Image 1 (cartoon, protein in one colour):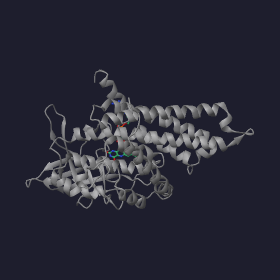
Image 2 (cartoon, rainbow, N blue to C red; image 1 turned 30 degrees about the horizontal axis):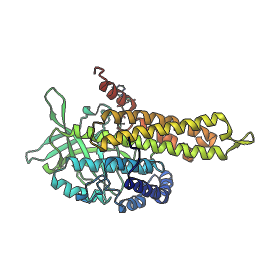
Image 3 (spheres, helix red, strand yellow; image 1 turned 90 degrees about the horizontal axis):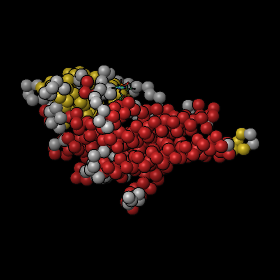
Image 4 (cartoon, rainbow, N blue to C red; image 1 turned 90 degrees about the vertical axis):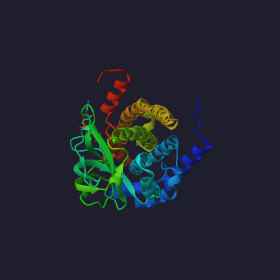
Length: 384
Ligand SMILES: Cc1cc2nc3c(=O)[nH]c(=O)nc-3n(C[C@H](O)[C@H](O)[C@H](O)COP(=O)(O)OP(=O)(O)OC[C@H]3O[C@@H](n4cnc5c(N)ncnc54)[C@H](O)[C@@H]3O)c2cc1C
């Protein structure tokens, strides 16, 4: 076994750490205060080629392998969960377009995404279909000219509504498969398409600066060449994208745990009670030691799943395990971090409080804790 990063990976992670310190930390403070998309930091990140990290070089991207990408996610996430998640959604949808798109669609769509001029969105969830994603009701009906007409409502759709949000991949039912399952097809919907609209940002407990909205599709007319991938073939592509998304969420959890550990240790060393730093109390030390050990375990699981993915091996179970374990541990570490900060941890303008709020969503996105447990039980041979 070789646990060393390559020299290129080490240099990349160092570059990301420097960028996070100089650009993302100030952007994080502004996002938390103003709830606005971090356009300056995003432009600087894009100038480094990172908006196109997962896009093939032939289309203007950097063509990073998935392990290197996930190491960057983890590093960036220790400074800002929000900025990292903006980048993750951007990267995963870009990859999906590269995966499903025809050569013409790739040539038309990927250069703007690689340059960070546009950020796309992934619209699967609906008011009546979350964990049971195959129950979506948004319909796409074939038109006599070969195009499509879409009707439906999507909800909780992230990376929407900013000045550069453009290009939503919408999943819709286009018929029935043998056995009665819906045939689901993906479509690329530009922001200015008549009938397509997004609502106001939904009020979230954290991830301020990253907007999540409801989308309406009312008689949206699309050309035949706005269909992405084969008719009825989008569900398996969405599931492939979710596997990398789950490892990405685990990397986000690792970054969050590291931030909690470092913040808590600093605070415990300087906060005095009973004439001593609270780090001198064994009960505080136990919390700090658990944070360090759990963070280490989280990183090992996540790196292993990332390595399986990057080397093209089967990794669905490893991705679910990493997501399940890291999101739960992150929530418990963030709670301990808040408690170590005492009353100030309860104040919503402190980093410890923000990390506690941010940790809660990790058990929900990319498939809830219970969905990961179901996937793993099936892998173990339990009946459906
Ligand atoms: C901040 C945020 C951003 C998001 N961004 C996007 C996005 O960009 N695009 C997108 O498409 N979606 C997005 N989502 C949606 C997200 O993927 C869903 O919220 C998630 O899949 C859960 O679906 P739900 O909210 O409908 O909950 P439900 O599916 O209704 O689940 C409610 C509860 O029931 C449990 N449950 C459900 N089924 C079972 C079962 N079979 N057995 C046991 N328990 C079960 C769940 O685990 C959960 O605890 C986002 C959500 C959030 C909060």
